[in-house]
Length: 141
Image (cartoon, rainbow, N blue to C red; front, side):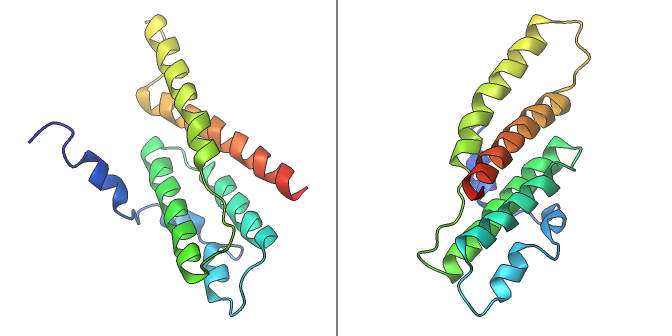
């Protein structure tokens, strides 16, 4: 068994540990319970609220679990209402990749840095989430 075998399969599992942070009055749960197909603007508002809640997490592991829970919520919504326009996290991941590389490079170039790996990932993910929030807020005006 290789070191990476099964790693990607773990991403397919639906984490439940931090999914509770995404539950609120203005949540995907309220959209699931609706008897009518939700409006795109309502979906985006719930998505933005979820992203803002994720910013309150102070552990990179919990934050990653929360992102996976958010993706699971979006997928569940798409399953219930086929054909709806739901937000995707493509831009988020595209923004995140260079941020992590830059932060890692900065950490390695400065051996005196006391930034932990958790802080490196946490800060990078927070920046990417903030960018995602900004992009989606622009879309709904």
